[in-house]
Image: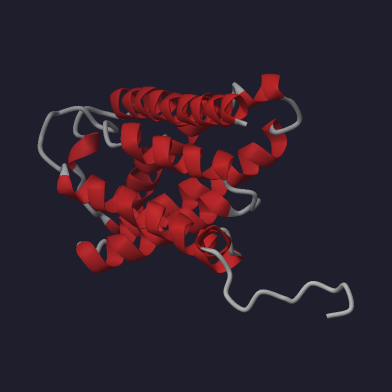
Length: 186
């Protein structure tokens, strides 16, 4: 033995869950679950953008919890795959991926200090506004009709921003709560 410790042959379960591959898988699954929730709770409330509450909460929470600078994009990729598999909806797939990219870019700019992190919910609102912007582009480019633009442009842009920002705030506060509880438990 000569005073050297033997290497363990079997890792414990916490090491398995904290591996890069499993973290990437969980982030991807979170994005897919966000899209699954979006598609499951599709019923007409005449409130465009209301799905931003859950989508942006999940994307912001995943981005803040994850150490990877591309985690919202990875979650958006999970949403992309889910949108294509669940409903064969390439427009939704492109939108959720672009929202993840925008959130990662915003986080890169805002993560300078804890004070600027409070601006992430506003970034989530702006990222969620991409949805009516893309739909407007699809309408003009391909003539694809969409129900959320039947009220004009101002109402969907406003409601998407509000729901996205509130969802971003929910994700941010969930992260702060988790961070605070971890600090007190150690």
